[in-house]
Length: 400
Image (cartoon, rainbow, N blue to C red; front, side, top):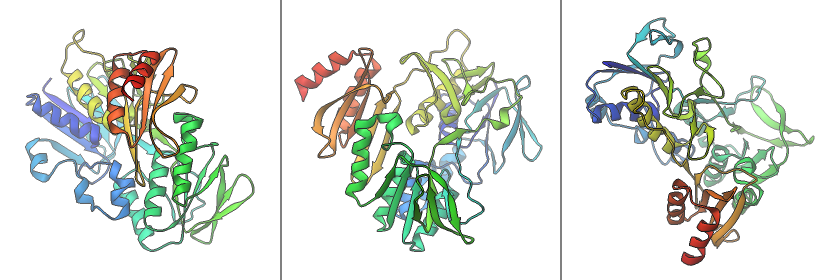
């Protein structure tokens, strides 16, 4: 294989290119990205950059010299609109083709949206331009910020806005934040963290629509009430960017469906938010939207392109994620469900500093920590080796 095209100037795509060069690949690499910016890190968008503490140049994944050393052909500001699987040719929105021996799909995901009625002041947060637009609104000293969705992004935006001293209301359709991920007990703790910091939580209610004269002024809720708003940020999840692959012949089902080595078709692999693959460690086909997975899967997928069939290793990581909210660092390792058994093994939910283990069918499947990084890393290792739940609880009882 003498050439590889990476579709997506993302974390997964950039780290994949770096891996190729580090491993000694001396062929041509082309990176296609729909944004005009150099590749950048996304987690700070909802935190340090949105808060105005960091400027955009601080989140670049590599400086100019390092990017130059990669010897990559950049096609930034160009969106992929089609893929010919047989010839491994990517068609760009300009009409020009990019053909390579191998293709890595790393096009990430886009935000779900709500109908805005054409009103200004309603945003989603996915990319740098989104972040800077919201930051400009927050710097204009609005009084009332409404966040729709209490997932990790919504929670981080709410925390950042509170850090600016703004009035914040969070609207969440579920009875507790993150209930579909962490379960009701831990979701309740997440709710209390926001209430501790003065956030007005409206739980178990959806959004019926927005009102205003040219600009949003109110958010109408499903229970007949309304919330005044100067700025709205909608964080209700994402959709993998696979529309450009319709008709390509690749299997698409909430992402690009791959085998357990990240291969989607001969010479074509996928990585990051857009990839869906069977993780044998958990016996589950999954798509993971986490920073750590984007790096590891980007490396795995691009190496798979250079590995002969039959010699490739399965990709079976323990997903890991963190979220900074106020003075709490929330870390989650594993693959948890809301109906898992949950045990607090150190600390307490009252003090908002604890570690919780998640068990399912007699196995340890995850660990969650609030300001307990050492415990998360320790139990993550147990998850990786398939430890039993009772074994993990015994470890916790011995070590505290």
